[in-house]
Structure formats: structure tokens, C-alpha cells
Image 1: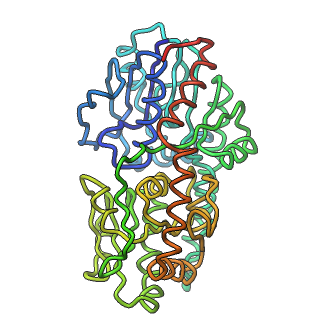
Image 2: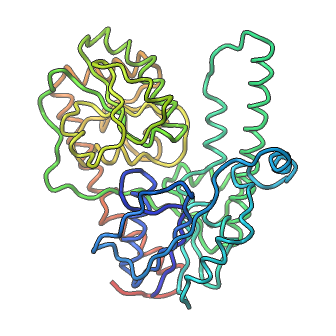
Length: 410
């Protein structure tokens, strides 16, 4: 069985949730036979590393697209173009599709599109059974962002700008919802990463939905520590350029942090991941350190006492939680941050949604060794049973064979 994987990502280095998921998809597909990877990347991306020897790839190639928002009359045209999400409104004249056509060496038994943007940018389905992987539901993510409380708008101009921004966000969510449903109607199966997202997708008109959870590698020697460090440290890790993570970082530093220091005065916060100048300004040593991207997350987790996931909007499931479970580091999360994993409050992690509640949960884990031990034991067992790479790769391979109508190999 031969597969073409078309992705709006390139999986290496494995330093973000979407790249980790793409790497897992590739490993699962390679259990069925040779895989060709074609990536459609932002023109600004510079860290395209050679694939590792055990990548499972037969061939690879990529093209780039312009992510800059259109300006002037072109921007007005995006508003008038009724069904195109604003983010995808800059046309490439079919360049991505031509590049893919030159790269492809079919026939393929299966085409797997990773992310809706890849499907939209190359113009749809090739002549093979097809899977569309919606690792994020863009419409739900935008709707949830609109629902996050904002600051008060005191001036009439502020209120008007906020109302306009909200109206545009609602319209953008509608356009993504229509695009996702339309794309799903043209493929043989649509994949999401949790039963929760499957229900959302079905309610939004997405047909033939399958669940393939996110996975993480099984760690031979987890780095989580039994004793709390001096000073105690909580960590939020992720691509901080990603709007849900950026909002979570501001919430953690501006609201959760002060409440935590009232309970644990010497507590430290570390923000780890690709960042922006605006978020870099949150750096306030020694209380807050904006670390930026690191070569190896295990080193950060080894010196961390609690992983906190303070997300207030978003979609999908959080690989940062699975990573912490695999490494035996206790986790505190909002309800949304932990959704879709089947992880239970006070069983696998602690869950709270207010700044005070998140601070209290972090303080409990910093002060109660028995609680830390109980949670990481059960979290690690959940990870091994449902989210380890071997388990998830098997599910991907089984789905690929079923859609392709082939027994495959492996």
C-alpha cells in the first residue's frame, strides 16, 4: 500500500503539538507501506530539517505559500468573497497544486490530507481514497475565542472596534465551518483527535467522522521528579505565537501568577516555546522567565514541578499534557485545556478555570507529595493505555487500510 501525505506542516523538528501529531500520522501510515510526504509551508519557515533515518518516508518535497494578509482592494475583495476564510483569501494562482502534481508519483492507494489548509491550498482531492485530518476545528476555535471575557471598553470608539472585531470573527467562523463541511463531503473519511471534537464536527455538518487521538512516544526514563525544586517552578509550554497559547500565557502571568505567589511566595513561572516580542515583554526575572524555544523539552520538564495549561479557547487535544503524563510531571489545567483526553479531575490531574482556582491547584501540588505521586501514577497509566505512540500508530494504520480497501502490510 502506497500513501501520499499532503500536510500544511513539516514534522521536523518535533517542537510543537501539530508537528508531533503529523509525525505520529507518518509513523502510522508507514506501517502500511511506503509514504510520500508533500508539505505546503509558509514562505517564512526556515527550520526545515532533514528527516531522521527512521522517519518512514520514501520521498519528500514541499512548496511555500504567502501568509501575509492582503491589503487595499485585495483586502476588500476577501470580505466580498462570500465563502473563503479571510486567512486563506490570498490566491496563489494554483502554484501549490502544480508543485504537488510535479511531485506526485502515483498511483496511490491512499491520500491523507493533514489540516484543512493543505486541502484548500492544493485544490482538493487526488484520484485515490482520501482522508482529511482536521487536527483543529477552526470554527470552534474562533467561536471559543469570541466567548473569552475581555476588558471593558470605556470609550465609544473602543466599543465600536470590539463590535466590528466580533462580527468579523463570527463571519470567519462561519466560513471555516462551511469550508470544513464542504471538504469533508468530498473525502472518504474525516479525522479528528477526540470524541468531543467528533460531536462538534458532526453538528457542524462534517460527514464520516473518525477519531484518531494524539499520541506521544513512550519514555524509557521519565524525567519527572518526586521532590519539589527550590525555588518551586511551574511551566507552560507551547508555540506562544499561537493565539490560544498567547492568551493562556498572558492569563497565567497576569492573573494566575500573583494569586499563586500569595500562596507560594517563591514560586516561579517559565514560558517555553516560540514567542513574539509582545510576549517576550512578560519576562520579569526571577518571578517570570520567557525562555523561548528550547532544543529539548525533557530538560525543561526535569526542572519543573507542575505543568500548567491555562487555555481559555482552542480545539483539539493538548499534546503538552500527554508529554507531561509520559514524563511523570503533574498537571494543572483548565477544563478546556484538558478536554478530549478522558482525564479526570483529582484522578489524573487537577482542573480549575479561574485564576484563583488554578493558583490553588498549583499550590496543592507544590505542597502535597502524596497528591503528586497519586496523580502522576494514574496519568502515566492512562497515557500508556490510550495515547502511547504504538497504540495510536496502530489505530492510524487500521484506519488507513480500511479506507484504502487494502489489507496493507506491517
